Image (cartoon, rainbow, N blue to C red; front, side, top):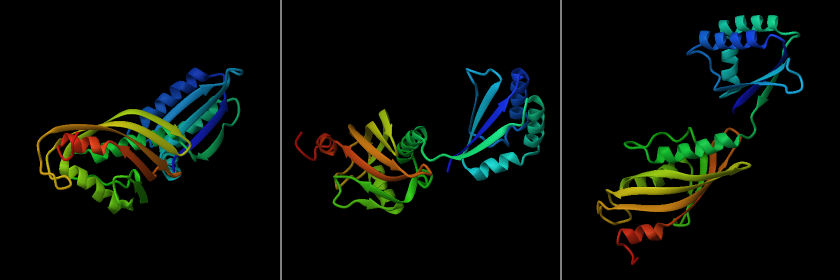
Length: 232
């Protein structure tokens, strides 16, 4: 679960503090585990500063805090502050930007050339996939992989994400799919044709940022028409 630490301090020596933060980043190059950091100044109190630091997890943040450079910089930071800084530790319960990025990442993984990469970085083990073109839903990581392999066996393809809308724990992605019919697909022998279709996918996420359910809508009938399997 993503972890965020909020550091609240008061200082009239902002420029010195800013240089100290640059020094910390330089000294911990390659070892610092924070993924994002933002420093804000209170508009109503110029001596009031808040730093928001994001980590992949609480455990990773603790690894960062145990670096000797972190301890040394912290002591210098306290010396620059008018009073002892306060720390607020937060487990991120919802992050729509992360959800959108994970949805994009799944499309990238599905279209990766060569062997299908592991999906556990984006999908929960019990992932439930809804596709109206299939008689049964695909439930579980292995079933999802088999469904993807069917498409990958029939086409060399890529996705282009056109739009994404996020609300709560769900992300809706409108995409364009373009592929070359390079292998057997539902009994249709490879034609070498360049084909395309559009679609929309809704992904639902759990708190750790992994996808637990997906709903797909796309123009399979139009695709089959392009392949000559049905009348256009």
